[in-house]
Figure 1 (spheres, rainbow, N blue to C red):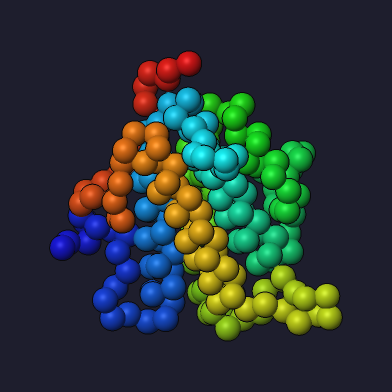
Figure 2: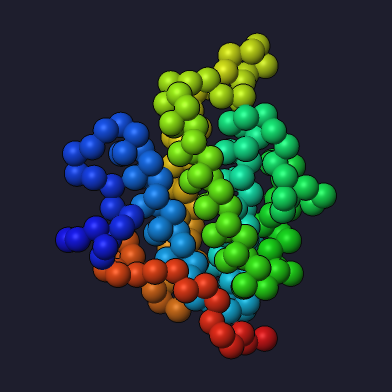
Length: 194
């Protein structure tokens, strides 16, 4: 297996940082693969009694990426594209509002958030490693570490990638644990069905 065919695979024997970031990137890739190439109707598909959709998950995880590696990491405001929206980090706005977004908007939102997160995480790792305290703290003032932020995001993706598995299978029968060799995100189809 070559790295160019499976660039999301973590190393077999690497450092703690390589394994944590690698696990996060593999989950990101698997999630993106499960949500990839769908039109608006497919991104709004629900499964069973749940109100979750792949479009809602794309938007939610984009917001979580930016919140984690902006506000929780540094204490800075979340910034664009979230400022002025109804998202407050704890409500369902991102899930519900995705129904009015185009596939192109949703894919660009998630792709952009992940790109920003990777750059911010790389800079933080270079500036102090996993043990450094971050802005996020408990009410009594104890600060989380960067390691905790990364682990929390791995958990968030683990949960929602499982949701994405069920939703994508309901949309078109796509199943599988990891993207196939050579897979690259393609975004929305050129023709969107109403």
